[in-house]
Length: 492
Ligand code: NAD
Image (cartoon, protein in one colour):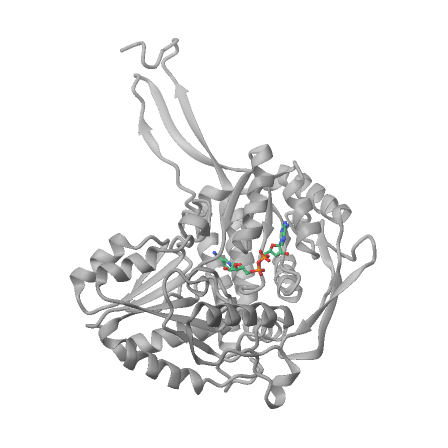
């Protein structure tokens, strides 16, 4: 398994020779590998390679670019199982979820590859005679892609494949917690036959490597997925030069369960939404808003089911909940447990690191349920990013929606109800980029826009065809074939 940067079609160490360690969160003594602790110099080299490659890559017909993406899709498909195992080993989520993560990359390869034969503009009627008018997409240039660790295959591919199909070249900086997944992805890109410099990978810290990518004037567009805090810093940096920027940030997603809902279904949804990926999803269900008439019973059932979830090494197929990322995350989640208790919420389940038996070798946290949570409490407002769910009650649909909308975030949302009118109102009234009806807050598909409102982002969307707007500039074209000077708005 390679453990280097990939710059200009070659595998290279950091110029400084420095490295950092990548460890398995389920077994801290398991060293996955040592990766380059790169500096500004390495970034400059990667950006130079991407800039040079852009001159010819932008001229490759998009359907040909698409064929390379199909090839990557095939390679990822053939290696799905091997990739999933490495991903689980380096970031902890259970195998069936890392398989899903790879599948998202495969789906994106085919979807973006197909876009090579579309990339539609509009042909419209000109207002003057003997004149043609149409709009077309053009690539932006070098794209800097900065990604988090929780979807180490899906998120880099969501960014890289659309960027490439549009004719951009890329420099990818993956999270330093998941360098192996990004390296395996780059190996697949190399094997598929992308020309040297079209795709580049630079490992290292967010501040140094990420900062250098954002600050490089040759990088024309930044796509960042990560915390709202870092996203805001990057937005300030990009604002100084008006650099194009797409931000996909945090969430505080809620599932609203009305009294008329299929409660068994809603319970399955809450369990999967809150504790899938150990709660470490931007779309995780971290608030459960229950109609007061069903709240007591539903919470008891939730606690009983969550108590039985099987924690352990995600490589073990029988495990349901893997570790959290590292000891730092245990400390951060524990701090929120204390905050919740001080605020007066009732700890109905969990609330501490899980350390029994083999769990002591890794960073595990007990599935946690807070009950009696008030909408304004910090545990109901701030992203905890762990296996913690806050249960809030409401007296009516209207109050439920107010609570659901009452945070600075707006990524995903869910309502369980059998009343079709109520479901339609919720779809209209919820302030979020994604709304599920009778499904949990997680489960996005790659051919629909993905992203959120308010402090979850800056108005862009990944996936679907909407992502093409991040990686292309619109050009309007007028072809006057009248053979004379015609003046729009004046020759009327
Ligand atoms: P993070 O913000 O700490 O890091 C994200 C990436 O940014 C990493 O590659 C990191 O190295 C880099 N980085 C850190 N500081 C930087 C800086 N100053 N300049 C440039 N780059 C920098 O986030 P994380 O802990 O990796 O991921 C968890 C967060 O990501 C959560 O808030 C989660 O909600 C969010 N997330 C959002 C989405 C979405 O699509 N909305 C998807 C997944 C995760």
